[in-house]
Amino acid sequence: MKEQLYTIPVNDAFDADTECPVCAIYEKLESDAIDFVMGPSYMEDDVRMETNAKGFCAKHLPLLYKNQNRLGLGLMMLTYMDRQRKEIEALAKKSRGAGSWFRKGEGDALAEYLAKQQCSCYVCDRMAHSYKRYLVTILYLYNTDSAFCEKFARSKGFCMKHYGELHEMAPSHLGKAKLEEFDACMNRIFLENFTRVRDDLEWFTDKFDYRNADAPWKNSKDALIRAVLKTNAVSVEEKAKK
Image 1 (tube, rainbow, N blue to C red):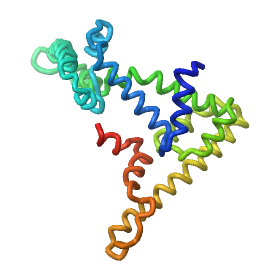
Image 2: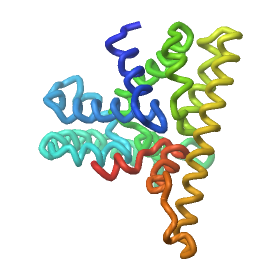
Image 3: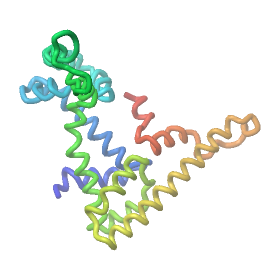
Image 4: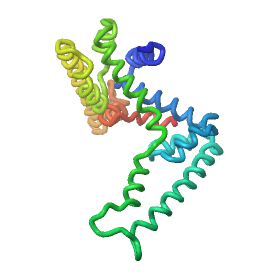
């Protein structure tokens, strides 16, 4: 395990006051990937070959645009569009119309290619390996580090997406006894903190009743932001800052 690459960021995320440490890890990976793509690397041939082939998804293209390196993004989009024009032109000639080989019931290569491009993203692919390694590291630390186990148990749990991913991966990385302990701990912190956010959200909505106008907000002022994160693995507050 490369501590400087994996264990330190995981410990830092669990030390932070966050509703989902995995979301914090993911957002840092995403930010680093965006900075890499929009840095000097966009001029490197191997990077350009991949961005030309993969392009960027609907989530990451706006983040690349906000990076302010408009020339870099413009050059990448130009060569990407040049490649896509050639690919689509060739497939369009084979797809439908008089003289084409396409017949009803056969696969439509053009439609399949266009659908694939909508799911293709250089940034997503660049993040994928490191993201999975971080999930494995969480399980590794839980299995080997008692201090981390205590930190894990004191955390505010996870969003639904990352709770599900850890739940699915755990049997492949933990022995039977440790798995039972992990499941009990993770289920507890998830449900306790999910309920905490849900109750804060209820009071947030109750505050809009005129009868509660003078009542204190308690911990509900940011409840809607935290509820979005808990249910959808999206930090609307962080996205609003970008």
